[in-house]
Each structure stands twice: as C-alpha cells, then as structure tokens.
Image 1 (cartoon, one colour):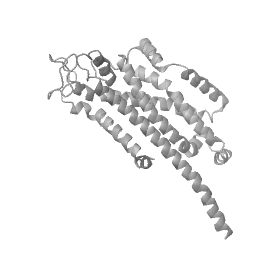
Image 2 (cartoon, rainbow, N blue to C red):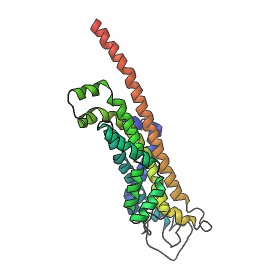
Image 3 (cartoon, one colour):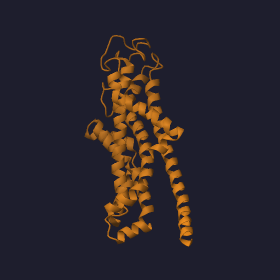
Image 4 (cartoon, rainbow, N blue to C red):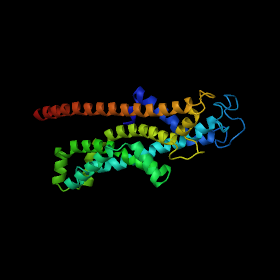
Length: 290
C-alpha cells in the first residue's frame, strides 16, 4: 500500500509534509536556537536576526518555542489516534464473532459515545480528575473510538458471511484465527483511512485543549498554547499567530490528503482485484476445456 500511495502526487505531498512535522517533533528541541523557557527584557520584540519570529510577551524566543512545542502537539495527536484505534476497532471486529450480547452492549456504548460532545466532556473530565494531558488524551481517544468501531464492524460484516469464512468456521477454526487470516486484510484499508483522518482530528483536539489551557501546562510550549497567548497581543505583533496556525492547518490538511489518497488507492486495488478474478476463472475454464 505504501508504494501505491507514494505513486500518487497527493500521497507524496502528504507524506512529505508529515515527514517534516515528525522531524520537527523529534529534533525540534535540538535545533531550537535558544532555550524556549528563558525569559528576557526584550518583550514583544520584532522580527530580527537574533529572533527570526520575534519574542513573546515574556521575552522568550518565538521560533524556539514553536520548534520545541511541536513534540507535544504531534505526540498528543498520535496518542489520541492510537487510543481511538484500539478502543474502537477491536470491539468492532469482535462484535461480529462474540455473540448477540457482546454486540448489543458495544452498540449501545457506541451510541452513547456518539451523542457526547467530546471537547466538552474532555474539559469536564479534566476538571474532575485533574488538569493533566493523560486524562485529556484518554477521554478524547475513547470519545473518538466510535468511528473505528463502525468502520471495522462494517468491514468485518462484509467478510463474515463469505464462503471461505463459513468454511473455516465449519472446519473448527477459532474466531481469532479467522480474524487474523481473513478479516484483517479486509479491515486494514478502511481502518488506515480512519486512522489518518483521526490523527488530523487529534491535532485539532490537542491544539484546542492547549488553547484553553488544558493538558500541557505553561510554560511548556505547544502550538495551541502559543496561538492563545499570541492572540492577546495582536496590536503589537499581528504576525505572531500566523506560524502556529499555519503549522496546525498544514498538518491537518496533510492528514486528510493522506486519508483521501489511501481511500482512492484501496478502492482502485479492490476494483482491479474484482476485474482480474473473473479473467482468471475464464482462463482456467478455457484451459480445462482445451
């Protein structure tokens, strides 16, 4: 699949942008020209050779804070996506094979989670359990899990009544073996699309929470936190919110572009397989008749 994604211009653009963001998350603190937490008397300084993006209201170098804050934003978005993946995809697949009771319980839970506004619930839970990034990301990931549940369940249902799965069940194969051998290959493409979309949603959620002061606490830098503080000094530095806003928008756009590319590539591969299979049957029949 990676080769097919890279064969498309949209896939190369999306992976290129996301690669830059990941490199910033890994090496941002190393390549930052100054300490992002060090204050100075030069508050709200303009763009100069010493401060490429100026300084904030405490005299801290804006570029250094932008580079250092990329790690918290990227890691937070990935954690949200991984939590949502495991909390949604695994129950979605198992709901097809573990009986009516498990299916009914998980469907009711998913219906409940869908009805909840996840941002408000995340704020409420962090207020109850403490203003920590772990609580916020865990709650957000669970509230985004219904998307993976529905996608994985729909894909598993399309395979559950196929002839080769019924044959495997008759022969005594366990549900775990059936999922590994037959179901996972059908579920993986739509889950990959949902995962790429959810990473983009995770960036928006993490940035929104840090914008509201939830999760990562000051003075630790985050893109959302920088955007929040910069908006208070627009009359002094109208350019200040541009850099964190552009990074957030570019990252979310690249995630959505990657998801669209994976969806198109998966659909094209499925159509190619459905076309080639009758051709192989006709070839085998013609050889048998000969």
